[in-house]
Every structure is written in C-alpha cells, then in structure tokens.
Image (cartoon, one colour):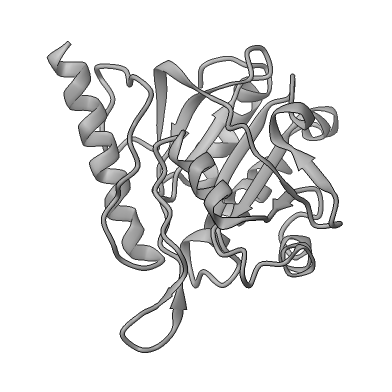
Length: 217
C-alpha cells in the first residue's frame, strides 16, 4: 500500500513540474485514481489500477453547439487534453503528436477515436478560435470551451490543475495547466491510461491501436 501511495505522489509531483511549460504555479489538483505500483514518473504512459470517471462536462463545441462529453463520447475510445490555443509549445506539440499517431490507424479505427481538446483559456478561445486552431492540426478533433469554473472543476476530477489566465512578469497572458492526456476506454468509458508531457508520436502510435480496442497499452 505504501508503494502505491508513493507512486501516486510521484506521478502527480512530476505532472506538476510540467506546468512550467505554459506558465508557473503549484499543482493543487487532487489525484483520485490509484496508479500501478511499478509506475514511474518518467514513463510516457501509466495504466491506472483505479480508473478515472469521465468528467461530467457540458460545454460548447467549435460550431457553437452544446457538447455533453459523457453522452457524446460514450462507447468510443476517447483522449482528453486540457490546454489553450495561445500556448507556445506543449499544447500544439501534444495535439500534433496525437494527430500524426491517429493517421497511422486504419480509417475505420480513426473514425472510432475521439480526441477532445478542452480549453483552459475560454476568455480567448471562443468556438471560432478553437475551430480555426484545430483545423490546422486535425479537423476531426473536438474543441470545447465554456465557463472557466466548470472546466476547472472537470479537470480537477482527473487530478489536473488549471489556473485562471493571468499575466506573467512580461505582461503576456498565460494559462497555467497540467499537461496530461487521459485515455478513456470504449468498453467502460473510464479513464484508464495517463500520458505525461514526455509521450512521443511513437508512444501514441504504438498504443492507439490497443486503446481503440479498450486494451492496456
């Protein structure tokens, strides 16, 4: 039991460090899933012993329509990432990695997969802005925006910390957020795999065929 607790603490301590890529601040998100005892902070993917429940989020998609995350991704392999379009590095890199890996799947499996980008900067990331940004990465990716407090609460259920957009020391607006990607199973709709910032195109390319089937990577 002690080892498992340590693994959880190590994992989320590592996740907190990734906040510096899009700003700086402490990670106040509380982990609500158990991590395998052999989980290492430097591993690109961690299979969770006790998966996350999919957030109960009803937001607005890039067409301006209501999008119920649970209802509209039910029974589909789903990847969820919280970030923002003005992010200078981690967010576009992560989304492009997912886009490249997705294109390695057979067309039928690509059609099953849902990749959801939830903005952490809703003040600037309007539906139109999200749509334009995602179109340059993968037009099938789902972009969601809405009330910040709702988004923050949804992220917190996944142990992901988000802070309101603020100005850095140079006066530039930044959004401080965790950089984890959570994979949800099409069989259980639970988030059972967590990817850290160090996950590469090759990691996703290798794992996606299994995730589409709801298997452990």
